[in-house]
Amino acid sequence: MKRDQSYFNRRTVLQTAAGLSLAGLAGCLNGSGETGDGTTTANDGSEAQGVLNRVAVEGTSLVVELGSEVEVDQVNLIQPNGELFGRREVAAGVRQVSFEIGTAYDPGEFRVLAVQGEDTVDETSLEIRPELEIVDVGLFRNNPDKPWDEVYGESKTDRRKDSEAFVSIRNSGTGPDAAISLRFLGDVPNPAENPRNEGIYEADEVVIPAGKTRDVYSNSLPFSAQTGDEGMGCSVDTDTGEFSVHVGTRVSGDEVSENFEVKYSGSETMIDCEVEISVI
Image 1 (cartoon, rainbow, N blue to C red):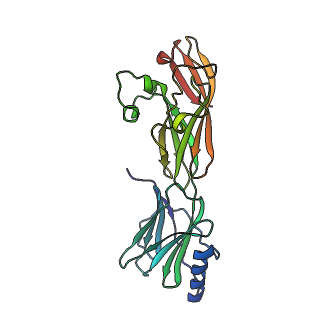
Image 2: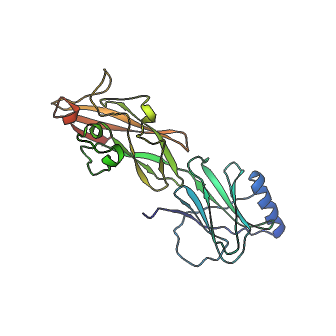
């Protein structure tokens, strides 16, 4: 599958050789000095004319493509706090290097410096910041085409699949993030404030690249038979309620949430219940 990519144009540093050397050194040590404006543009496929020809976030990596006009010794990546994130040596003839940023980085403006000897010969900056939102919640009975058997395993009955749910999370930002917890609260049959294994089925995290949507599967049986006085069960007549979904995130450290309306009808038991879910 082809990944969506965020592209940033290069900015050639128009300074003297001495000024370039000083700016490059200062940038590596403390992040001072002028930074370039990373403008998001489409790759038009034109022939490279500069040093930093293309800088893009792909999946959990930052990829730097170099032009052919000027040789460089190394490419440095500077974090938003001004500290060096990583350095890549560039061998003769190499035109691409990458940095694995993963999902443990601090979001903000990153600087990419192309260095030749003691001089910074090109520089650009780009904002790497995820933005997650919950866009859908669904059950097996309403979404049988999802890979339920791959996630929960095959069984003679659909009891486990009928009790769990998937949550679709979209990342509309410019950097990757990961969902690390999942909670269902309110009018579901089995709400859980502190679910086992953080509420995500057999995964410590689910990585969501920039521009992508990923499904996260529950592990807390939120739509199993009602237990205790909390939550809401099914009835022959229609019962209407509201519940909320909460997803913990690794990069920002915040929790994103969304509220949904739910209608239960057609049975006294959840296994035969008709469930309708819609965003409020």
